[in-house]
Image 1: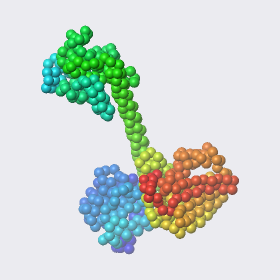
Image 2 (image 1 turned 135 degrees about the vertical axis):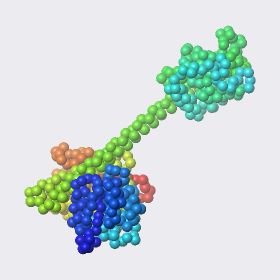
Image 3 (image 1 turned 90 degrees about the vertical axis):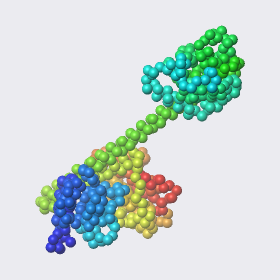
Image 4 (image 1 turned 45 degrees about the vertical axis):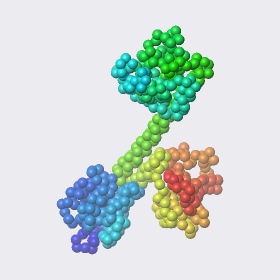
Length: 131
Length: 423
């Protein structure tokens, strides 16, 4: 995965705040990913429908549009079960809503090392449930 | 059915009901009927009335200028009127009582000069009649407590009239009490709704404030990644420290909203909480933020503690930041467990806290007068609420030698107070 591979892992960053999204893209790119951007869950789903090479989604929870980040994680789990989702929020916890299998929560503000760890944990343990 | 009975109120000239009564008035009368129905004693009152007088029909009626509505009825003579049933008010004697405010008592219609030729007894076919006005404590006329019978009865006696008067007063008292209770309920409901609205407002505000703040923070981090010169890096550092301060204020405000304005949040308890790393994390953060100050720590945490480590860390952060801000010299943090309890103390040197101030320290929005720019004054309040949610207490002792805050919570959560785990 990441910088070591010939082809970088492709991550879709879903975040409505422009600067926050830009920073996330920066962190993913620095960590050896190829980062694609979506400003909300609806745009993310259009991108997922249009290409099959995305392996990781990194999404904020609270966003405008028809789906929030947790709902997006469930949609992704059902329609693209091989894709791993990291859900993030500035709140201490993702509320009382459990996340689907193949996804995990990461609190803001996050460091680049946390993202790398999270992706590794998710992609290297595909048979295991939500972390 | 006897010849004075009837099936419905609007038959013939007995009950030509005015159809123009407004629905608001209808609703008010329906409410009055319901109020009488809620008075448990009414059935007994009507039974006693019938037993004592020997009369076959007794009722509590709501009487207005336009309407006569039976609220409660005892009918042993198949008069046929049910609660909610209505007579045309102009066909009743109650209309006259409403105007005069005086009771009407007829032992024997045929022998009574005033009522021998009256339309009402002939219409409804009764020989004895008694009706006592019911006045509410505010003086308003509600209606009547009345009784009729096709036979004569000896009613004009002090004990009968007195009984009717007492019962009418008793009914008025119950009606008044109900109205007061209803008003109190409405006020309580209003208060609860206002509190909910306020809480919602603060939660939305907090969330909406966090978003732009996250943008500013992200922008600052992006700038730092551009390898800025020393001066720019220092400026960005100031931006970030302002962001942190603002984020802290928003967190405090949300905690306050959740804790104080209802709702509350449950502690995220862990019976085997990793307390040491949580506390060390706080200490490291503070050391980074206050590099010029000494923080001395001694942790002796041999026993497990049933608590929410994130909340205990928050409490320590509030206490220690307070000590660094207001005290002098090194800040000492001691944490230890014994068989029963977990104890955390934060102490510093500096001017002692006057006793009159010490009492108010833990109140929300407490701020000392001398300095501005010190937050909302919620830090110590939130810390004490965290202590309380854990079934423990936070106290302060201050002397010329040192000021020391002490948290003490039971090491094992008490099962007797499961609902207390709220802030």
